[in-house]
Each structure stands twice: as structure tokens, then as C-alpha cells.
Length: 87
View (cartoon, rainbow, N blue to C red):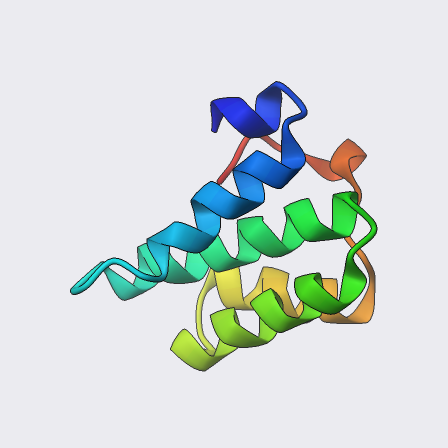
């Protein structure tokens, strides 16, 4: 995501949050967007919002890579230095 790459973390979080509001959006896309949004909130030091997004992602599905990431981030805040170029 270009906003994330440009270090526009608040705007990136807002854009990612919008994915969850799209009617009939693919659940896996929503889950990945929620995890990424949580990462942006962690980067901004807004841990409560980050935790909320990780929990929302797990409510979509407890299976798969995004769910694994959400569980990991619930235990330990994400840092931008961990970015691997994924959304």
C-alpha cells in the first residue's frame, strides 16, 4: 500500500478500515486489511485501536496467515521495522 510506504500511517489505517465496510467484500481481504490496519495503529502508538483490529480480524476467521499474524500482534505490538511488503 502506497500510504504505508510513504509513512502516512494514519491515512493508511483509515483506508484499510474502509475495507471492512464494503458490502460483500471478500472475508480474507477484510481480515488482511484489519490486520494491516492494526499494524498501522501500533505504529502510531494507538495500541487499543490496534488490539481492536486484531480481534476483529480473528472474528472473521481464526485460520490462515492473517489470523496467525493477528494472534502474534495481540501478544506483541507490531513495529514498522517488521514490514515485509505485505498488506
